[in-house]
Length: 452
Image (tube, rainbow, N blue to C red; front, side, top):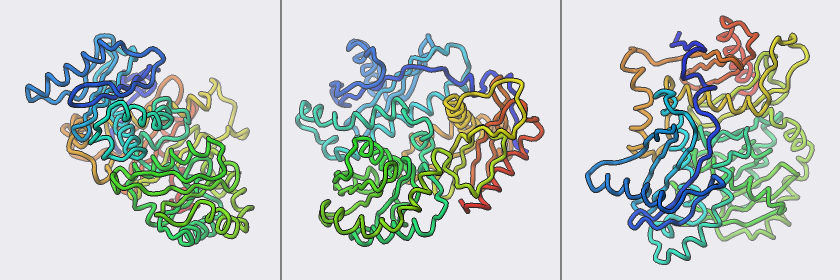
C-alpha cells in the first residue's frame, strides 16, 4: 500500500490553491517588446511587465535561469523562453501566502503546463518560423490575434470536463459500438487520401486512425481544441491550416473538418487534395449516412464518456482514468443515483466535482505519482517534474501506488498500475476503509467493458 494522506494535511486538494486570476504576457525574448496579454480583466501595468522581463534578463546575464517565484501576497509568477525568441510569463494572483511548499508545486505545475500549451498553440496556428524569425513585429502582433480564442480557452478553462490541457492526454469518449465507428473513420481518411483521421463527440476523441494516435499527445490535445473552436463557430465544414508543434512545426497541413450531427465532427489532416467541397459532396454523405443511428448513440453517451455497458458504483462522484501507455483519458461526473442512500451532507455540485478532480490530480502528480512525458519534453520540464516528487522518493524505497485524501467536501482516492492511473472522488459517507475497493472495482468495471 502506498502512502496515505489524511484530510487535516494543509496540502489537501481543496486547499491547494484558491480561485485566482491568471494573466498571460507574451514578449519578444531579445528586446522584451510586448506582443500580447490575455487573461485577467485588469491588465498588468507596462512598468510591471517591464520589471518581470528585466529581472529574468538580469538573471540570464548572471548565468541564472529564473523559472518561477512566489510573491509576498501568495501569487506566483512563471517564466518560460521558447526557441530563444518568445518569452511567456504567467502571473497568478491567488491569495495563498504561507500555505506551504506543496501548494506552490501544484500551482507551478499548472502554470508551467499553461505556458507550454500556449506556445504549442501559437506554433500550431502560425508556424514556428513566423514566431522565431519575425522581422515585422506589428504584423506578428496582428497575426497572433488568430490564436486568442484558443489561448483564452486554455486560460479560462471554459469546458470543465476537458482535462487534456493539464494531463497532456487525449480526452476520449468511449462509443457504445466502437468497431463500426473505427472502420468508418479509417475508410473516410483513406478516401480523403490521408492517414490521419479523427471523430470527435462532444469535443472528445471517439475514434481515430492509427497514425492519428501516433501524433504527440500534446498535438492531439490541441487539435481537439482547434476542432472544438471550429465547431463552436457554427460552420458545417471548414478547411483550416495547422502546423504540428513537434511533428511539422514549419510546414502546414490542411485540417478538413465536417459536422456530421450537432456535437459530432470528423476531421482529416491532408495535403493539397481533396478539396473541401469535393470531400463534403462525395465522401461525407456516402460514408457517414449509414452510421447516423450509431452516431446518435454516441451522442447519447454525453458527458458521461462511458457506454451504458460500464456500471459505475453509485458512490463515485467523479473519476479520471488515464491510460499511461497510449496517453488517453476518460473522465466523468456521473449523474447522482437515486439508489444511493440519502447523504447527511450535500455532495459538491457538478462544477465543484470537476474542480476537485483537477486539484486532486495535481496533488497526486506533484507529490507521489510520476507522469511519462511525451517525446520532445525538454530537460527543463523533466527536471521540474523530478523536483516535484524527489522529496518523497528520497524518503522511501518504492514507487507510490495508492493515496487518499479526506477533506470537508469529499473523499478522494488514487491508484496507479503499470498501465493506468485512476483518480476517484466519493462522498463523505463512503467508509474510508472501502476507498481502495471502490477504486479497484471502478477500474475493473471500465476495463472489462471497454478494454480501455
